[in-house]
Image (cartoon, helix red, strand yellow):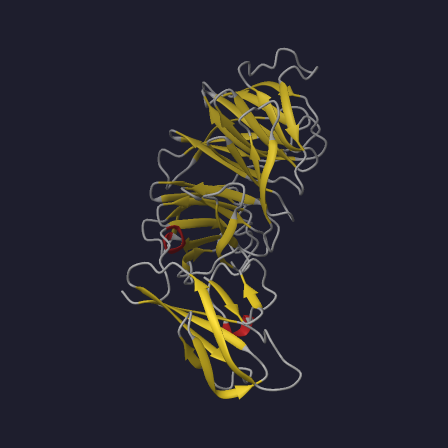
Amino acid sequence: VKASSITFFEDFTTTTYQDLSNTNVTGWGNGNISLPSKTISYIGSYDTPGTAMDVYIDGDYAFITDGSSGLQVIDISDPANPGLLGTYDTTGSAEGIDIDGNYAYIADKGSGLQVINIANPTSPTLAGSVTYPNVDARDVKVENNIAFIADGSGDNFKTVNVVNPAAPVYIHWASGPLTATASSVIIADLYAFVADSGAGFTIYDIRDPTFGNEPTGGQYVAKYNTPGISWDIALAGNFAYIADGSSGLSVLDITNPTSPTLVGTCDTPGDAKGIALAGNFVYIADGSAGLQVIDISDPTNPVIVDSYDTPGTAYKVDVDGEHAFVADGTAGLQIIEVSRSRNRQFMPLGVAQSTTILSPNSASLVSVTLTSTDSVPINTNISYYISADNGLNWEYIVPGLEHNFMNTGNQLKWKSILENIT
């Protein structure tokens, strides 16, 4: 919608004249407005005994790394009423998790890699474990019988052979410009992508997981120092989506892995710590600001379309079907219904209203002509109203026709009402 009133022009690229208290449409500030989407909503929760740091969804089960309380297995067959199935208290502080077959691989901070047999989720048991020098395991991904570990020590990226889960064997570490704490790793094709709070986004060639040239850095490919603090990564096509701390979402083009480039950003209200991707949306675990849903249909212009403020501190998120599962720190597991945002279900009514756009020093406004550029889908309607007396009296106006005020004044406002009439 674009509206023009006398000498005033509104293209919705800024919010200078938006009346926040009387407006509920989406898109004002981004160049167009539309009906507000139906919001995501709380479904259920389970308060784990520790601090929920990560979550992995596998069928009807949520596997939670719960800090000092180890692994928690939650039955989510009824998302509104999740319940505890089983636990295994690891020796360290359980932080990151990946699942491969009947085994959960847990990055257990000072206790290294813990491999848990989850064939019977009601009774998880230790299959094997391995530690290594300078251990501070934060995240793990398993690919082709190799566990790739993001480690918070100075040797930030490590590999473990897990061909035999009962007897994992430490292989090597990879050097590179990792200057602080590696917090997340993701594997795609020939590369490992590592989020590091000091060096940002770092890429390694993993064709030789023994890193035969190490410690000379022969397997290091490239890095990009993101605007914030990189905590987590999701990949889709030629793009890497990064939960970038206080900078929100950062989007990198990785078409050429030797030279990643920043192509888009979206600032979130909290501290972006975890990320999951489903279709054209990314879901950000945003620390104290809970869950943020961001539309990435255009990776160069990601836009927040919905949010839910969880009660705890959102560290990680996994998405399965209609639900987002949030590892919410001391608030445990939070389950949020997100299909409304993904499928763009709309509210029946939207109002866009301006603040005062024209205020002549003398003489009342007598008439005005409004013109508009709009798109009205089937089963929707847009109507326009104008007020010369600062919103005390609203008068219906037909775009393109001169309107003579019944109630004159010298403070001009406009509003439009968008309706879903299905």
